[in-house]
Amino acid sequence: MADETTFALVHGAELGAWVWDRTLRHLRRPAIAIDLPGRDAGPAERRALHLADAEAAVADALDAASSVVLVAHSFAGVLVPGVARRLGDRLRGVVHVAAAVPVTGTSWLASLPLPQRAVLRVLYAARPAGLRSPAGQLRRSLCHDLDEAATATVLERSCVEPPGYLTDPVTTAPPPVPTHYVRLSDDRAHPPAEQDRSSGRAGAATIHELATGHLPMLGQPEALARLLERIVDDLEGDRADDPTSPHAV
Image 1 (tube, rainbow, N blue to C red):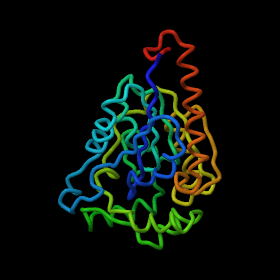
Image 2 (cartoon, rainbow, N blue to C red):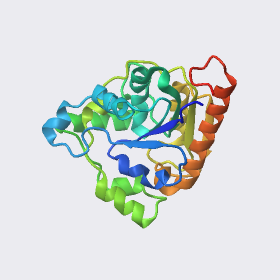
Image 3 (cartoon, rainbow, N blue to C red):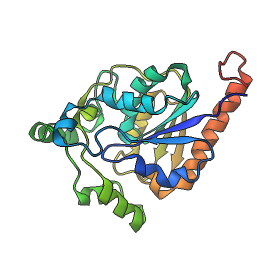
């Protein structure tokens, strides 16, 4: 019998593993929500962190998992190629949740519209230890469709993001595994038109849509969990039918 697939849940910028708490309650398969380095770091440490550190932390957290589906939210789309390289054939598929996928050779920052990109470059130059979005911006971009409890959690627990994660170039192309993209139709942080460009760069063969804002894991956790489980059901069905697969039943 094939080993059970594990969900690797990777959060977006200024968030943490806590953002997946509501969704974890609805998943029937094993799942690991991973905190990227720098969540509680001081300025000096944040300045020293780079994309490779985040990629290594995700792979290390999955050391015991033999079959992985990587679920990358928002900024975490930039981690997918590097994590895939580290996991090798243990990676069975990728699900991007409104993820930012830049052109290979560029950074997360380069995936943003030009005005945002210009402003952030100036701010990162002035604050090399990183930035935390103002509460009003978080409410408008992340929390407009969330209940008060979830909104309060986001405002309380959001954190400064290490700039290296957002400015280091992604040097490896998307991995050649089944790739899905969850398009969020009410997303104000990464609008649908930008998501469409990201899904194309990711090579996503299947697009799913949820009528939510940028944080469906908080706003519609059960719907997101059901979708993730359905995606893996399909992947495992395909795997069982392929006798050449190292994970075939």
